[in-house]
Amino acid sequence: YPGDLNARCRWDEMISRPATSEDFQKVRKVAAADFAALAKTVKNNLKGPLSEKQPVCLLRFHTIGLIQGVFVIEDKSGNRFVLTDRGMAEEPSSVELLRLVPADAIKDHVLVGRFRHDLDRCQLEVKPLSIVTDSEVIRLTL
Image 1 (cartoon, rainbow, N blue to C red):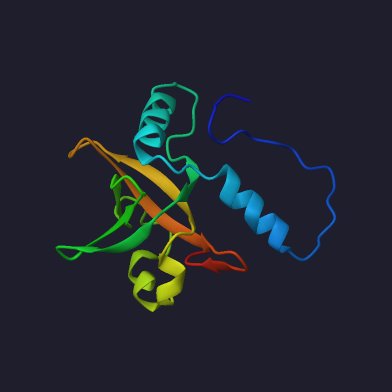
Image 2: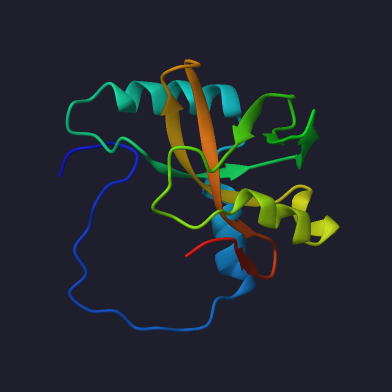
């Protein structure tokens, strides 16, 4: 299948089991910690005619917060992405749910986010889907 970021796979069968702390550590290990490099990877992926136009990525963040009334996610180097629901009307809103997330869950964890390219602003934005901590997954949308 085409695409580099979100490779498709076919599951013939699976065995369900509870997530372990080892699973959460693996998620943390494979998450992108450098947002500048991730932005470059996503932009290059978007250039492919058959690639996913709204790729889902794991972002290891330093903090999530509000700047001038807009939610942002920031890495350890200070690079940021705007968190938004714009352009994804078919999905329930998730950004405002970040206000309800415990304070310890928005510091130094992993965000599962769907990227979109805002063509009007020439900017990558991220829709938050879930936060993965060291012991749980906090789902923000379906």
